[in-house]
Image 1 (cartoon, rainbow, N blue to C red):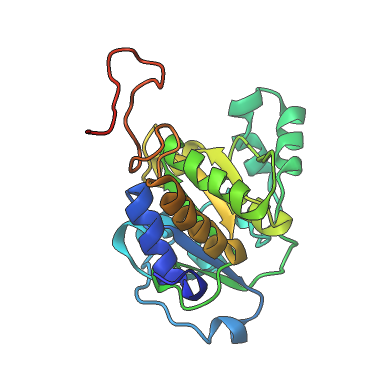
Image 2: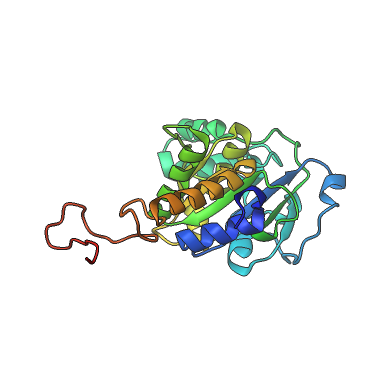
Length: 259
């Protein structure tokens, strides 16, 4: 595969094959106007209001391109994260379960980063390989070892170290994407209550966000590193991901070339 001609479909193929991803990476695009959004078509339409993490679940699991607006979203955390609405008193009360204090709950809600009120008209989610538009953010839902490899390849590709992330008590997927978009930085966080339940995720999975204009660079770095090391694994060089799960100093299991 030609590194210089790598496109989104090629990047998805490389990432899924070399890191053995369980799901498609999800391209996320925010549209500021109806005219801009109208240039791109969805493949399916969700018939009722859902959460944003359910939008991404359909794209990563069922391979569909979807479009949504504020009228598509039932989750108030997402509505505020996307700048579709201001936080309500009910949203603050919903955060009482985290901090057990009304003033602290207000501070938690107020401190979560969000898009400016009314800035976006709509959004699209798509499997990375099928995205009809350059994404603002690419979301991976993966296990921590896969996240380790993705983020290490980001470090290698863009010479940024250490990486720092944004963990919030809620809005893991919607807010995590917004934070990455506004800061133009990679992000990683755990699932929140909503993304774990409605978002169809597992206890051992995390969210990783890569700025859309940097995803090709991450895939290229993975390809170059795999060729350089003769395998994609960091824990055990020279083997495919995840690599031989053996301590490098183990006296019992040692490999050597055949004479």
